Length: 327
View 1: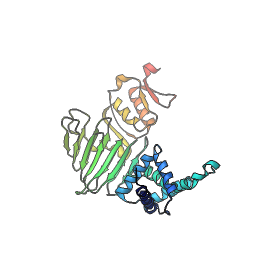
View 2 (view 1 turned 60 degrees about the vertical axis):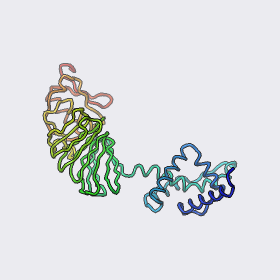
View 3 (view 1 turned 90 degrees about the vertical axis):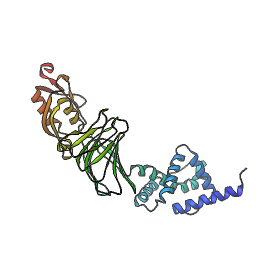
View 4 (view 1 turned 45 degrees about the vertical axis):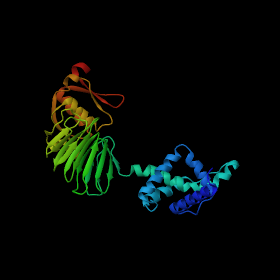
């Protein structure tokens, strides 16, 4: 059997610990019992563990202005409502636990979102990071920023981004995208995440690209080179960086691009897509410069060039059909 005095001592220590953390008056044994019951409820225990781990590794976050604001907002939203007479006995304990729940909610939902940047379909965004690096996000893009003492890491979860990296030899700059990792010190490069791996284009400077799933495994790019790590025989190829990064200026440049690929690229910026009904012309090359998101201009140009009919679908899409087939 456990020693009652030891148990009481542990309860007192826990009460004192929460008193220091929350800036509240010491809580009673009844409150601690209620807190223990709350913590044993499914879901609450995991939230508590996350808060506990964060507190022990980073110290108290109570002085953080963002945390303070979130905590106060949660407390205001958590004001008790009228309860039945049978539940009044638990009200004091529940009220004492509101700061704990408030901070748990603030930390669990706020901390993972900190350092996350994203755009919607058709959107673009430029972000200035703390180290002076500039990141331009393309359509439907989401990335996470994780800076530490010895490393600056970006996780590109989806989409495409152009990085203008501030030089810091003591903290390498790394971008992770679909199993591919790009390392640079001070340079300009573009990363487009694919279903597997990534497409990396170097504009200025030098980068090292690694992907353990491919036979080659690693590459060092020179300015004007690009590598798609999804390919089993992936190797750097020469490209025009201005064309590859034209999206950052709101333009799409096509040079002998197969029509099917051009439509797929235009569709990345459109909530309502373009459908090419006649697949026989999908490989025919197209040249031109179009504004991202300007579906009307692209459809008009393609329809005129290839003698197609543009039909609006009920779901918002536009269907391109050969005139001889579509009427």
